[in-house]
Image (cartoon, rainbow, N blue to C red):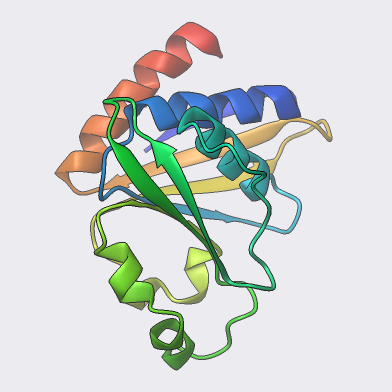
Length: 164
């Protein structure tokens, strides 16, 4: 686990763009944190870094938004942006095709993953976001679960050391 602090919405967005540069097909990002912690802003930065051309919004009412983007390797891929906040029962995950999308080879960004942790893949990058001492400051705690995500965290540490 490691911690990154951003001092403004722009820095949080830029961190998302930097995360995107390191993502590969099949990656799963779990974004946890209170309402207003910046999960959607971080998702927007990730989408921008993946060259998504349409506007990215929180899928709170639709539960899932699908975008087309391009990974750093130049590979075209789908981005599956989930918001599990409004789901009440695990059966609703099946209703939205959750497992199908996680295995579809795109990149999954899951907001509110802590609602159904037992239904998430065991290998993932978990990012917990909190408001810092200042209203625009964000504390991002990154926890790698699985070899791929340990490697990703190491790469993100190098980016963070040079940027934040």
